[in-house]
Amino acid sequence: MVIMQEDMNYTITTLASHSCLQILKGAKDEGFATCAIATSDKTAFYGNFKFIDEIIQIETYSRFYSLEEKLKAKNAIVVPHGSFVAYLGEGGDEKISLPYFGNKKVLKIEGDRVLQHEWLRKAKLNLPKAYSQIEEVDKPVIVKLYGAKGGSGYFTAVNKKQLTEKLKKFHFQDKKYFIQEYIIGVPVYLQYFYSPLQQKVELMGIDRRYETNVDGLGRLPSDIQLNYPLEPSYTVIGNFPIVLRESLLPKAYQMADKVVASSKKIIPPKGLIGPFCLETIITPNQEFYCIEISCRIVAGTNLYINGSPYTDLYYGQPMSTGRRIAKEIREAITQRRLDEILD
Ligand code: AMP
Ligand code: AMP
Image 1 (cartoon, rainbow, N blue to C red):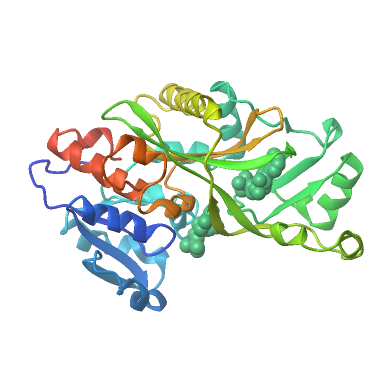
Image 2: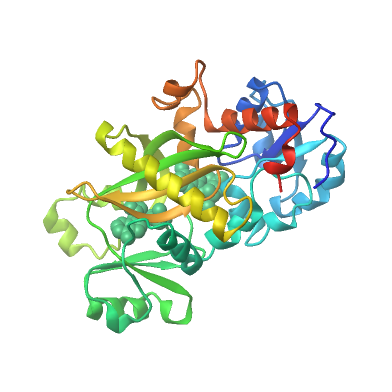
């Protein structure tokens, strides 16, 4: 994507959802013009925020592409987030012709559970066992539908017998799914930012999710749980902040460095650009198991619009992931290196 580097009048734009407020607040703090693309039910809400210069109303998010000419005239740079996959569909990001923050090629790998598993394996991360055959299952497992996001379309099974029954019961046998060892531990989501300009990973924050109904089931007395035919679901409702034991932080950094290094081999030359998240489960012997990677800003970063305990260690000012993205863009403009961070 060719853009005129000497022209500093860029507009940071994104869909009005997910982490839009954080992204556009960060862009404004870094001196950019900002634009949100909103459906009619959302324009009034997003209109409450002074750091959003313009809201363009759209019938449905899938019509985003029809705005591209208009946005081009504003020198727009698109910052993607989780709603792009949810609302533009699989492969939707690739169709965007505007300058786009990040590496679209990473998304193909991220979106395919098998390719993703291969990538993390090559990066030498500790992973839950993945089963390609039901017959191989020898431990409790979690089964995930392809494309299931935000934790819906999952179920757990304690053994092979129960797995076979549940695959039938939930009609998974006709669909593409992924069987993974269920790790007992605590979920910890590590939010990172990889700067291609500085060739460095920063830990931006850590969170865990608040998921319905799995986080509600534990509130029921056990006799009711036993007699209540409820399957846990993992639909995300919000996020809690976490700080890790400091002695675990070096490991958290090593994992991210390994993922970035292997991304450059798998998708050369650029690899990962900007924010990503390693979703992990930490066991009682303090081992991280990586269950998934997200290669864009995750909504858990919304906890830290005013900075996190970790960003506070690097910056003399409140630094959200949204602002960090805008800062990278600003520095790339100044150094005439935009090509290194945009797709
Ligand atoms: P929304 O904008 O809330 O409709 O969400 C768009 C996409 O992002 C959906 O796939 C959601 O599951 C996902 N999402 C939204 N908020 C969160 C969150 N706090 N944690 C994880 N995923 C989220
Ligand atoms: P995900 O969408 O992969 O982040 O997973 C949604 C929920 O399922 C989270 O609460 C995770 O803690 C849980 N989960 C996913 N995979 C595993 C696993 N292999 N072992 C234990 N819990 C898991």
